[in-house]
Amino acid sequence: MRIIIMSRRERTPKQHVILEAIQGRTDHPTAEELYRELNEHGHAISLATVYRNLRALTQEGKVRELHGAGPDRFDPTVSPHYHFRCHRCGRIYDLDLPYRRELDSLNLGLGFKVLGHQLIFLGLCQNCQGEKEEPWQK
Image 1: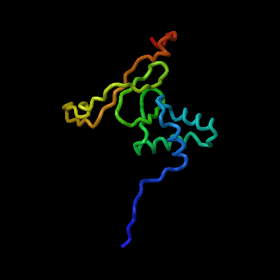
Image 2: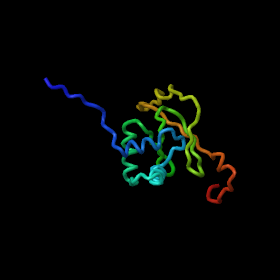
Image 3: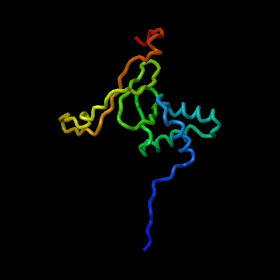
């Protein structure tokens, strides 16, 4: 009898580098920001490779992808939590608010089944509050 042991998929060296570059960060970088940073630190890696590997890490549950206005951003904190997005600069910040698990099973009626929720507060960060407002932003 032959026993085959299936292990989880091995990470590529580039996935290791990308995961290491994003771990512990709270600034929710874009793929382009990670690409520039990795290349500045001597890693010869293409932007397409960064995108592809971030998406793979997202599917594995190692990274969370945040969509919204502007480019997608990536969050190494995959546990449920809330965010604040600055309307002017687009930065995303983690919020230290208790996650409301009861909303994950909220009955909305109309045949919907809630599987989870995300909450992003919108406004101006401290840095942008002091900047002069452009006429198009009113």
